Image 1 (tube, each protein chain N blue to C red):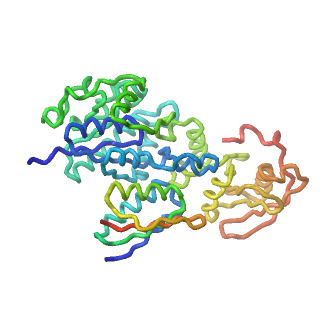
Image 2 (image 1 turned 120 degrees about the vertical axis):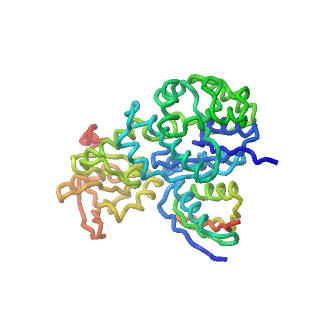
Image 3 (image 1 turned 180 degrees about the vertical axis):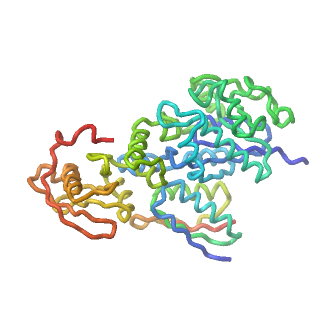
Length: 74
Length: 347
């Protein structure tokens, strides 16, 4: 199992979702992906995308102008 | 048991494609959604850059629709291939810079490629005859079938009763009698069907789902092309057209002035790519300068920028001009009066 990161700063939704979606395609079940964004819309969209596609959201947090989301690929 | 047929639905995030997908799902077809991001899509988040609108729900409507339907959604970045659609539309533009007919053919064609790569049987859309002046007319619907290459693998469930039978109907995957007969611009049948399905809180974008249908946005895009002498564009270019006041006092440069905190925060991300002006002596918005301004231009830009800060009535305002290397140059200017900023400078 691996822990990967995705820098999606300055991208407006849906680009962070698209980048996360493309990255997840390269990962295996149990891998985690940490996504850093600056569009607060990602706080809603990435978890929604995870619910639709059956991935698990481990963490969402907003610190200053940045959003951090950690997901586990199922 | 035989596997159900599989369809991919073009999901825009609006009501029609949501209903079309549901109609087909109710016939036992496995449906997944596909959504194409051209860079010009109207997204709640783009509007939410502006702080005063941030109380609105921040959601991607296509994802929301997929979640309501309980289907997967595949969001596809088509920014690069879409450039050819926008720059060279075979069927021209609509009332603004919207190449709707070419756009629909392009998207159905991309969906067709996706079905072939993923083992799906057909494509469905929420198109309704007579709903849109360019892409959703009885005479243009066959054009989309032909030019996309989808042919009779393209099903329009909301108006299917008026269209020739498609492959899914001939194969018995879809019961033609259960297709609908919606036509025209009235939304009443869709609203009634949504109520029947219990769909609430669906998106009703007044200007469609694309910024290219917007007159102001289209004007800014054409202005950008004219000023650069080229119709090339990158994603950042077209995103910036959605944000701020755009003021072009001279042909070779324009100012992008943040209108509020949300926009200023967004523009902050572009500091390293643009010469920009920052208020020093008073509070004021961040101003990006797109173009290649000389010292006189910067002075003029600063006078305009000062108009939009809290020092607008002060005799003198200090701003810093910061170049792309981060080198700073202090400017002291008399803010321009509102009447001195020519109306035609506003793009």
